Length: 348
Image (tube, rainbow, N blue to C red; front, side):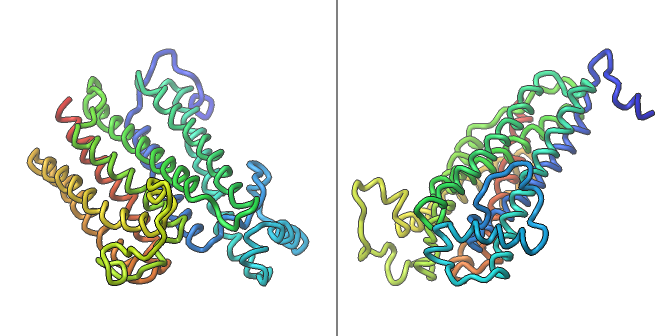
């Protein structure tokens, strides 16, 4: 029986249900990865491992000597020299834990995608026209590993933290992988119901909603990377003003939308309501088409995300609330994609 399991069929035998379940499992792993990434950032743990060792790095330090060696490597980093110079080995182990788990999850996701992909390809179970899509998602995952190290490397030369721009690229790539995985899973679900079903087409409103949502994700990453959430813990005003004008305005002016923490936080606060308006419009369209579950998922995620964003500000970026805010952002993306896919199926 084991031999038959790995025999290559003479004819294609598409298995869209199995592939859908596999992709949904991978999407769940990516969701956990984003959560752990948020904790890693908020606890300033991302620079605790100063080497990129894709294979040997899967094993943590074993024994006191190995831990001391890892600690000595960290002591040469700008973060230790400029910020954490009084850190003990026990403190180092605490931040090492989150970065190690983050990298270990990345390896796990790579294996969880690559091995089933090879199996489905060998069994000729991938429906026609989807092989290149799945291979493309796998390639994005490999690129994400390179981007992750590129981000970490920015904090190991002369600065005690990573580049907020590289952090944004890293986050957006993770969310792109999540979105692509979820979308193809939706196509598999459609093929399971109707073998001749065409791939869903993204409705125009879905394109606009996702575009503004990803723009909001980018500003959210800038806020995290610049620690902009620490400046004002009041809402809706920033202090006593809508926009505090007493702070330095960078030149050229466009730099303020990337490097000025005050401007970045201001945009992130109010762009949220444009995202909410578009998402609720999408939910209304879904509701009118009879897609009630999808509509309520989007509406509920929008309300929860707005409330969590406000609570994150008012709490002074309290760890658990801030992590919940980041996690809900991924769930909102999933809800929007699910509703847009359902509308695209009806259109097709």
